[in-house]
Length: 274
Image 1 (cartoon, rainbow, N blue to C red):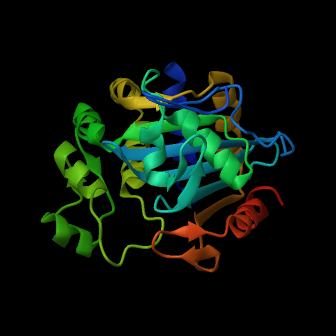
Image 2: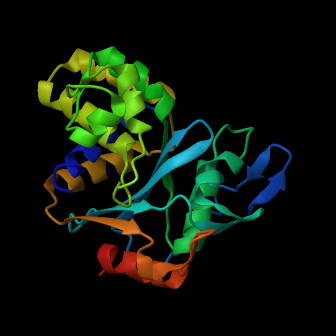
């Protein structure tokens, strides 16, 4: 986890440059002043939801919980197959929630925030969404990306080396293997490595080019002042943790995947707030 959090800070830096739920013909409209936020939570902890999607399908959902006072940072991957109650629409898989959002605003981010806040008793107010189909353009803008690819991944992709171009990167992030660990996100790994290369190389033109490409494909409501605080906390913090939820004991049924929400909240809160 320690190697990933500074890269999350880099992502936040790149993004700086940028009534109740009701069913409508153009998707579910959410009052941004009513996100069902849990107002009792520690105000020092900021919860940000990251979505990596492929077209209309959300492939990966990551919750970043960062304590600006203590420096604790917890990255939680949420199983997108989990069934949740969506405000104004009934039950649906997490993977489908973003696409159910308001078409007029061209963003399902507020609906994802409200859904997760009600499900997990959280106070998420920031979302960042990247369509992985945009990765080839981002990679090609800076050349190639060097990834730590296992032998089984190389065999599945039909490649020999670890240096990937844009289309090879897209094939990598879309790769699914039977023995993948829960919470595996190749999209997250590729994006973080891409940012790491830009930061490590110190090539400001490459960073600018990558940032421009990234921002053109990102849907986010990130507040710059919030980002500055979070970047400082992430870079200086030492308490970094990773979770994948739900865990086996929190799953009630497999098809569809329903979850013991109370057990899930307790596990999450134990890492983030205690």
